Length: 422
Ligand SMILES: [Zn+2]
Image 1 (cartoon, protein in one colour):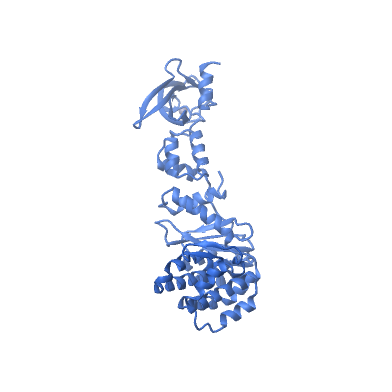
Image 2 (image 1 turned 60 degrees about the horizontal axis):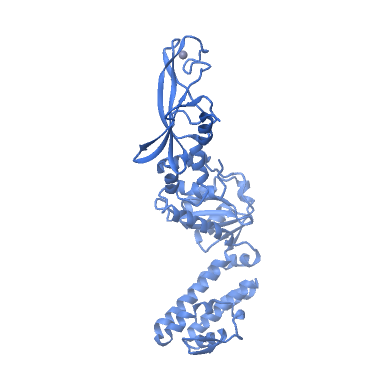
C-alpha cells in the first residue's frame, strides 16, 4: 500500500487528483495557538474546460502557478487536523482570466471540509452544547451555528393540515424571546411537536394560527390547555369546532398548591407542630384511600410507632381550616380519578365556609372554567404527553447555558425531536 493510499484512507479523501508530498507529507504546526497536524498535498488535473468562459481545454489554457489553502479536516487522534492543499491554477488565453481547480472534499471558497461539516451537523442531534461541538471540531462557535443552519432545512409546518387532537403548552423562553414565555403545541395522540412559537401572547398566536387553512383548523376536535384564559378566546376565534379540555394535572396542581399554602400557614402559626407539618407534607397530598394503616414505624417527631393514618389524623386535628381544605382536596382528587363530573361540580358549588382563602381562590378559578372541566373528565387527552419534551427543552437550555437567539434554540429542539432533517 503506497503512502498516498494510506493518507487518503486516514483522511477519508476519495479524490485521486490530490497527491500528497513524498517527503514531509505531514508536519506539526501551531495554528490558531494550538498544535495541529498539517498534511501537505497538491491538487492537479487537466480541466475539461475553462471555468470562466467555458472554452474546451486546449493548448491555449496553460498552467499558472498554485493557490494554497488550509482546509480544516476531521480531527485525527484528537489533533486538530488540516490539509494544506496547493491547488493548481490555470490561465485561459481565450478570455484572459485565471481559475483554480476544485475538489469535492471542500466547497468552493470554503476552508472547512465537507466531512467536518457533516460531523458537526450530526453532533447537533445529541445533548451537547454548540460551544462543546465547536471545541470538539476545533472550529469557532459561529461556524457551528452556520453549519447547523445550512444543513437543516428550515422547518415549515404544513398549513393545510392539523392533528385532530392538540395540546397547548408553554415554556420559559430565551433571553431575547419576544415574550417571557414561548408556545409549543403538539399532537395529543402521538406527542409529536407540531410547531413552536416564540411568543404566547394572544395577538401573536392568533396571527400565527390564521396562517393555517380554515379546513385544517376546523378539523381540530379537542385542545388541551392549562388555565390561561387567552387560550380560550383564541380557540373560540380560530378553532370554532374544537372542544376545550382543561389539563387534568393543572386542576390537581391548583388544589394541591392551595392545600400546601394552607399547611404552611398553619405551620407558621403553630410553632410547636412546625416540624411535623413540614415533614409530612406528602401525606396530605396522597390519595386518602391509599394511606397505610397497617405498618407501624418509628417516627422521631412523635417519639413512637405510628402508621400513616395516625399521622394524618394528628395533623388534621391541629387546625379546622386545614382539615376542611384537605377534605375538599381529596374530593376533587377522587372525582377527577373516577371521572365523575356531576359530583365534582356539586362539590365545588357547595358552601365551603371554613376552607382557607387559598382554597376559596382555587374554587373560584376552577368554577370559571367549569364547562371545560367537564371535557377533562370526558376525554382522556392531557398535557402529560408534553412532559418529556419539556424536560428535553430544559436540558437543551442548560447545556447551552441559555440560547440568546430564539431561532437557534428552536432549531436545536426540532433537530433533537427529528423534525428537522438534513
Ligand atoms: Zn476562458
